[in-house]
Amino acid sequence: MAIPKEPRQLMINIMYLVLTALLALNVSAEIFNAFKVVDQGLVTSNKSLDDQNSKLPEVIKERAKKKKELEVYAERVDPARQYSKELSEYIDGIVSDLIDEAGDQSGQVDDGDYTEVQGVMELKGKKDKDVTTRLLVDNGKGAELKTKIEEYRDKFLELIDEDDREAFQKEVALAIDDETWKKSKKKRKNASWEAFNFRQMPLAATMPIFTKFKNDAKATEASVLNYLMGKVGGEEIVLDKFTVVSAPKKSYVINGETFETEVFLSASAGASSNTGINIKVNGSPLRVDNEGVARWTSPASGVGVKNYTAEISVTNPVTGEINTYKNTFEYEVGERSVTVSPTKMNVFYIGVDNPVEVSAAGVSSNNINVSMSGAGEGKIRRGPDGTFIVNVGKQTRVGEFAKVNVSAPGISVSKDFRVKRIPDPVPTLSGKQGGSMGNGEFRAQGALIPTLEGFDFDARCSIVGFTMIRSAKREDPQTALNKGGKFGQQAGALKTMAKPGDIFVFDNIKCKCPGDVANRTLPSIVYKIQ
Image (cartoon, rainbow, N blue to C red; front, top):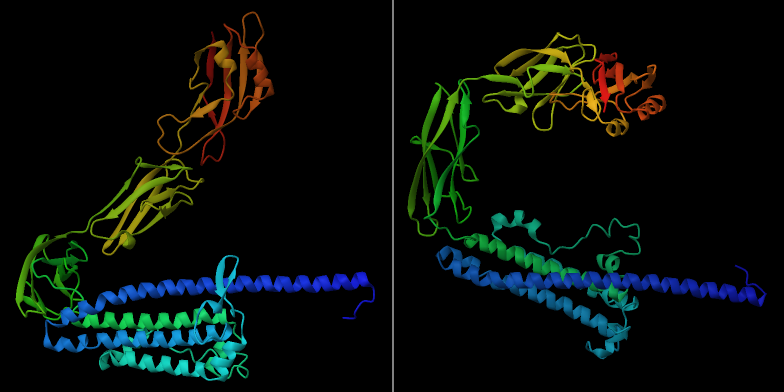
């Protein structure tokens, strides 16, 4: 960009550059604040891990005293705690060196390494990129850290039984990501793990990284302690609250089917290993799977209630004592049956949803197939509550039959239903079908309303039109044609003329209900004005 000669333009350009720099500094401050928040969160997480890990060692050692062969797991508790402590202290040493080097270089972390910013103490060298690059990358401290992490990861794994070690590796949070930097587009510049993570990184940005490594060490310590707890018996076994449980797939089976149930031991103290558990049903031993569950099957023959006895023997892994528990259960064998019943009436109505319940004894609703035939283009669908909804086609003739077909394993049933149209509604004013009506009440009416009396379905009919006739004493009859149920201009004007002694006749009332192809004519109604 050419430097302008005009002083005013030169000043504007300088101010623009200053503003840009200020904006950059502001964004940088927000980023550094984000690093600080993340680091504080990790510090809090580390404290929680320390609290959790401090509660387990004594419990593990106490339970290991129950058997001689469990003592080896108690001996691994202190090394697990020591490894986590050593690695955390090593990382703290690196952090202290970085803070001091970027601060007052007094040889230790003190007040001189911090500065007050708006009442908050912050690292004096939080933006220093040279110190992280020099100490961690150029001087080899980062490579040494990588080696330490890998070394302590192996030490933690050595505390795990060899047979369990391969499966346990996924529980070890302490690890080195040696793949990301190798696949980085900046691989030439970041030709090592330490360069990828620390080269030209501001000091404040590395703080969460180091806290995260400490978090990994403490999390790995927790995983090892939990493993050792499981080996010495994570839960005490109390043998005075065992209950035999049978969980059949179905307690009601159909003649010819197979009855199947799961038999297992339930204890109030929680789940335990199935080692030493033997299960029998009616005296026959069953195979117990890894979950401590055995399955017993029996052919369903003969209708009626059937009984079976389950017996479970369990060996206490601590005392070696054997206890036996027994219980008797029952199930019922029945024949297949099916019921199809309408939930409203024994007919299907054109133009509305007709709810139908379909059930078959001993058959899941998911295994029941329901279809419909006849009734024009009628359809049937499953509702959200498990019932079925029938919609009869508009072209169906009144009196025609709709057929509901039900099929399930071993079942094929059809049932006929009569088809009707919605009954004629009753035309009303103020809820009255003709008769006497007060002068003011009649004038206040806004529309002729079709009412479906005694019809339980959710259906609404509408008035298409009517003829309104006013007959007054010593006057010629007056007529108004009205379109729709609401009083139009002519009918409304005629209505306002009502006075005691007048007679109003509503004739040629046309109505249309759901499912109607053509309009239907309703009976005339007469109102005498009082």
